[in-house]
Length: 111
Image 1 (cartoon, one colour):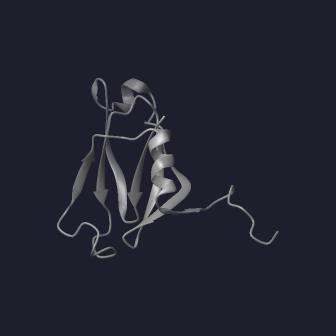
Image 2 (cartoon, rainbow, N blue to C red):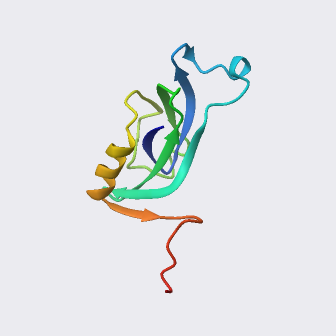
């Protein structure tokens, strides 16, 4: 698996694999890219962790609501992520930042 962080207001666009642009008709499925229930804060911006299958080489991300996050990408419409990170690199990043866990696997603080 490969990983990347993406802040609120950004979404996944086109995806590339070894053969070029991901072809859902040929592969008979979309690429497996999932937002996980883990985020970190970087310069007052919440960055969500995403997981992508190994076949994914590059991912285009697009600003979905420029008016929502004026400081995060003003003037930028899209970016292509060419260096997805490993699980070890995710752990390094989480150890040096304020990380929060959300979703079904979040710890119950009432115990």
